[in-house]
Length: 99
Image (spheres, rainbow, N blue to C red):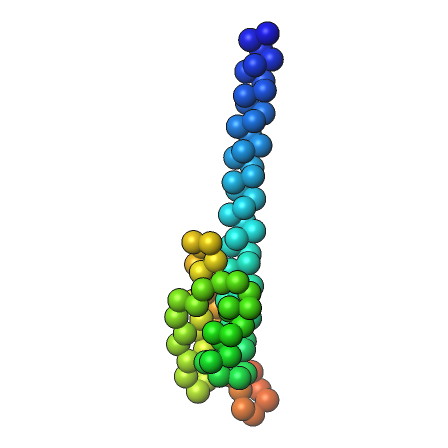
């Protein structure tokens, strides 16, 4: 009987830990998706578009750094922060990050 109780308790703790980890992974992915979408919309349409698209992804915009050549966006989703960077190009040639 003691073995069954211990086995059930261990199973419950394992499932609870996996559930918590899964929630963090999903939150991290949703935060990254919102940051990516915000950075791309900022690079294409401007800084105001980043805020709109981040809100549509149910995330909170933390910061936007926009210049004529790039845009960096930081968002937060359920306490998880992620950032994304997009490069603008007016001549149709995008620079790569490889050197």
